[in-house]
Length: 286
Image 1: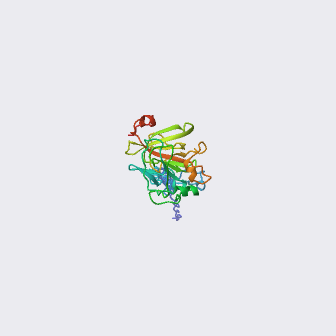
Image 2: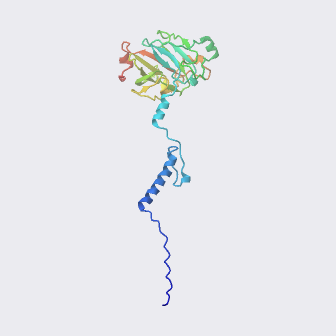
Image 3: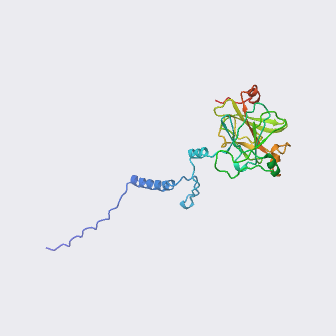
């Protein structure tokens, strides 16, 4: 019998690995999610340039709204300049920008007397030097580190220390002098000829008081706004020196300083006729 040649076994075909479509798509999605999530783990991107990774430019991190609010709440107020029946009166100007502090008589009898812990300035020496002491570098302490002038006004017959003039350059930011609610923002004519603004603030817990700021412009608040004393910007110092002569502070500031200032006083809102005349149009603070 003729021997037959042995038949060779066919070579096995290499096995192909088949990945189900669903698994492949899932893997790509996971990989994409990881690549996107990684930069966000280190901060929030507010904008991306281009489509390539090399073109991606992370901008500043977005500060959470609650963090920004807490930072505002933590802002240090300006220093105290006076008190009125237990209500703190803050400097309406930042310490570094104050040119002088002057207590004087208010023009009307409804103004309440103010007390202060500021040392009394020597008016004669201050006038000769054309300067009143203010520590512009002060950082600590509750009360302003400055001397205060106490001057009479021959045209007024009210009590001494019923008004404060806090000097500053025109355009300087004015802050709320007390903590409370804005009851009225009102345009009026100073001396019946100079445009000016009154901002009336009812101190928290004291409906019988009305704190008024004048000689200001560009009001930044409106009736109903709650303001923090020494913290909330309410307006800017008006350049009244360009319109009137005889500003009392002019004698106690340098020659190039015309004595611009903001005027603060706390009035008795229960004084007969006061609400009808001075608070006409004001809101009722709840």
